Image (tube, one colour):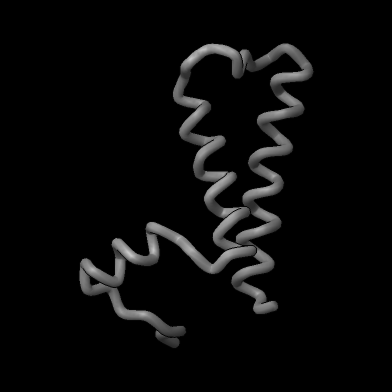
Length: 72
């Protein structure tokens, strides 16, 4: 597993854990439709893209002509 995939998995997991903890503490109500569902979607997508290597944003950026690689 590469560093990039590991970072995606950890970042997505931290986003989902922080939303869960905020919901359990009563500071966020995830039972209602809100913009926090966008945060949950991003966290889940980061997590799953680290595991499956499928990332819709990667596909969109490549089609838009953004170069791949390190760029250093």
